[in-house]
Length: 273
Ligand SMILES: Nc1ncnc2c1ncn2[C@@H]1O[C@H](COP(=O)(O)OP(=O)(O)OP(=O)(O)O)[C@@H](O)[C@H]1O
Image (tube, rainbow, N blue to C red; front, side, top):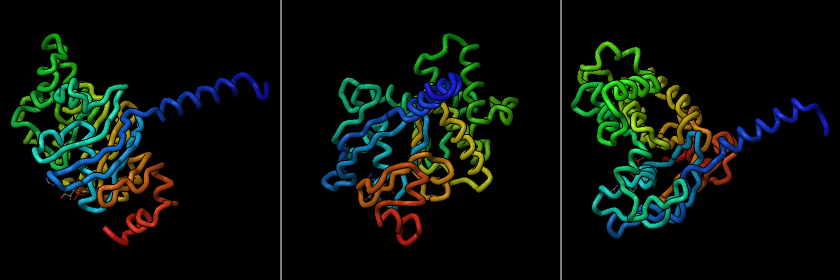
């Protein structure tokens, strides 16, 4: 064998780490979405990796949010919307009639553009999901879930002495971290974020971006963003959408430095969009 045993073991560990990091979490196959007769998404297939951040970019109206909503069946809530194709998660198609969309949405959490805390206390915002899904056996377990979710969202130190205060009494950036903590509280596997920083100032945005970077070690994260800088800062993979089609998808660094398609190049250099 070339080299020493330590080198060999180290290489094997690195390979394993790489394989782990590159595992597919969500496999989207031939997705079409229609709003009544109008088609908004055309035959999109893509594999989204686990323990990584995938950014969806593209000009306004290209279908980023529509496609994102397919991943937790939020389009079911829009009467005119219909989705075709398969989305395989852990071996099962999430669109199969046997899948309960409410349970699915606890596995695939969502954070929206505008922070939307419930009109409840900070504590109850987090405790709500675990309560309805029966995730805590009693009060002390619920307290633990609330604390650990707030810690993971980087909010615990700021709110631990005011858990009974309304969620809406927090600043915009804190409210968005509260919504992230609420998503985390039901132990999701995937977190979808639809322009989560668009209502925040640069400091609150930086805090959320740091948080996304920490969370990617545990979750599969998909973020829709209009900010090229944000996509480049937080994601490992980037998908460029145009007119309802997936034009290009790959490692963020390559997409931003050496895109294959002229439409991607034009968009990232600000020539359109
Ligand atoms: N509820 C809806 N009913 C009918 N059409 C819709 C609905 N939501 C989106 N659309 C249409 O589907 C297309 C894709 O919209 P979508 O919001 O997914 O794009 P987007 O890339 O996320 O845009 P933006 O960056 O502006 O948020 C657009 O033509 C839009 O008008």
